[in-house]
Image 1 (cartoon, rainbow over the protein chains, first blue to last red):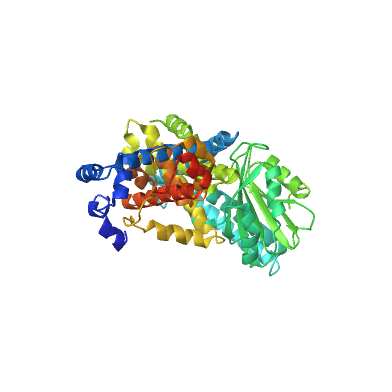
Image 2: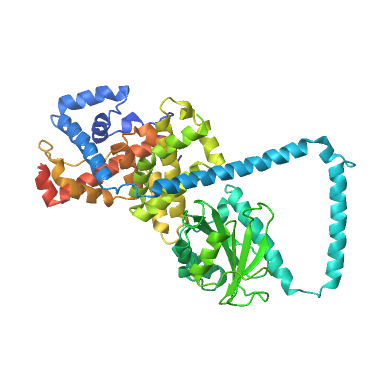
Length: 314
Length: 195
């Protein structure tokens, strides 16, 4: 609270009665907000000013008229908004369940004494897996040239898949990441960030695939070029309402992907029916990574962009 | 209250939330997007937990508590967006400097003969006057005029002192009344003649 406000309000937040004008007294009386300590002052005012009663009546009528005008001046709730809100509630609830299930599963698992025992079966298995992975990595590393073209998209695809799920499941911890909430503002923000142009019509194409832009923010897709993360939510046209999608756009081309082709870069084994899938393509010197679990909607998004459907996995 | 009932009661408030969103944004599409975002945010685990911690969450009239809670989220979501919108930094500055304003007891009220009023006739002028107000005035006018909330309830929703609510409401009413007074037709219709 500012010093000025402190001087004007009491401990309970009410304004100091001595600072209340006659005009405010009338308005408080009209609003039936007159406190006992002000009633006597108001009675005196009515007794001394013949217009006070009329003023109270005017303020009451003004309140009713304002209420009526604001009610009338608002369009009815649009058809479909209730369904959109139900989808939003369902989406938030799914996030709730996903986080809770993850926490419960992890808690149950880690409460087991055997999990932590150095000689326990889990730790033994983890040790064996780690040793195998290390050996495989050393062999693979020795067989590769100093830099590989394919490693860039593999790393990027793994990253965008993980980031999509992290943001989807932990909205509170990732809230500060998303600073753009209007699709129209994305090209300007992208240009500020990368010095490159991103077509707004590309983003609006998502809506014809039933995907609604939600928000966007800076992201750090592996590689030196800056990138943005845009999120979309399904409106139910091409897949269940509220399904989440991410589009990562990096201001650099990719040597692995030919312009004019779409590739399946990654599939997560998280859901046998709808695995988290990453599509990738390059266009006009930018690399796009589209992430989601509903490839039907992702295919429609590609079609809306004039991008061919993925021919296969690389 | 179980989750299904909680959701139903929250969705029952859709019209009130939409009305507030519309009067804040003054744009149908933006209002729809804001409402959807409000419901998404409202049902995130932390938001639900915050509602359950509120002293009024166990009240008999849960509908009113849920409406107040949704209004708070609508207000916060709208102004977070305004703050992020670099294209309108002035609006944010105005909003925050206004929020610190206390009551203005020295301001004189409208001086007119209030004996004969015909509000039905000034509907258009009144709507125009309200539309011209800044959103922070409109939202208070809405909660006060349409939803019939008390000063304290509005103060809790907007998380500001009651004095600030009284001050903004005082200014909003004064601006509306002045606008009506400056409109010759409205003045005639209302019989508002300067004393």
